[in-house]
Amino acid sequence: MEKHKDWVAWAVETKALYIILIVCFALYLLTKSVLFAFLVAVSIISLFVAESVYSASKTGWKHELKEILIAVAVAGAIWYGGGFILGTSAPLDAIVSCSMLPHLERGDLVVLQGGVARAPEVSVSREEFDANNWTNQHLVCVPCGERLCVNRTMITPKGLVVLGEADQSKNLVQYECGICGRKMADGRIAEVACTKAISIKGQRIEPDYSNDVVVYTPAQGDVFAGETIHRVLARINVEGRYYYLMKGDNNEQLDIQYGNSPVPQEKVVGKVIFRMPYIGYFKLFLFGFLLTPHGCDSVLVQETL
Image (cartoon, rainbow, N blue to C red; front, side):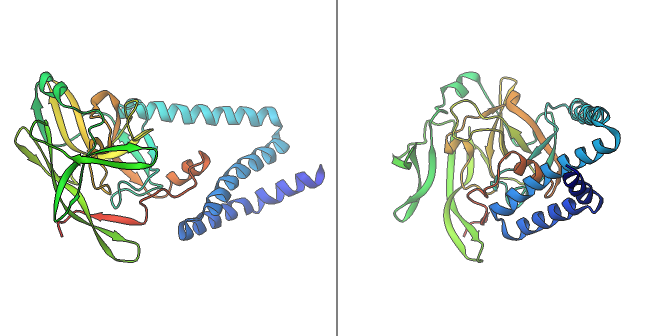
C-alpha cells in the first residue's frame, strides 16, 4: 500500500504523467498512430486518478469528492451559461472527420453560436418544396463516357450502385457537374467529378467559403449519422421556415446528393464562430474516436481543371 502511495506521489510531484501525455500527443500528431491516440486517452484518465488519489491522501476523500463535485458544477455552469449567452444547446464541439479540410481539421475544437446561418437565399412555396423528391434522391455527378452527367445512385451494404442517368428537368434543385482536383498526400492532383454549382428556380449558386459553417443533427434515416459539421451552400426560405443545403468543403457532392435531407433550422445546433486547433483531440480520444477516418489524406481543389 505504501509503495502504491509512493508511486502516485512520485508521478504527481515530478509531473511525469503530464510529460507522458505531452510526448504521446506529440507522437500522435506526427504519426497519427492509433497506439499513441490510445496512450493519450490512458494518460488523461491516469492523470485524473493520480491527482485525485494524491490530493485525497493529503486532505481526505471527503474533501476530494467535494472538490470534484465543485469542479463538475463549475464546468456545467460554464457549459449551460455559455450556451445561454450564445443561443445554443451545445456551445462547443470537436471535429471528428476531415470533410471540412482545409478550413477545419480533425481535432479542432469549435465554438458555436445559435441563429440563422449566412448563405444565398432562395424563396419557394411549401408546395414546390414538398413536391421535390428529397428522400433517397442520390443524384451524383459522375463521368459518363466523354462527358459528365448526373446519375441516380443507390447506397447498399456493398457500396454505391449506379442506376442510370437522371432527368433533372422537374427537380427543384438542379446540379451542375464539373471536374475538380483532389490533392493527394504525395502532391499528386487527381481529377474527380464534382458538383460545381446548383440552380434553384433559375438562381445559380456556387460553393462560397464565406458562407457559415454549422453543426447539424441529420434526420433519422439520413446517410450521415450523428452530428455533422458542414458549410451551408444555400438557404431555402419555405414560407418563412428555413432549410439548408449543406456541403463539406472536402466533399465532391452536396449532403443531399449523398442521401441526407435538407436541414431545417431547428436541427441546426449552431454556427462556427471560432476554432481552437488540436484541443478537440482530447475529447475524441476519451470518447473512443481513435481511428483516422477516410478522406484525411487528400484535399479537394475547387477550381475547374
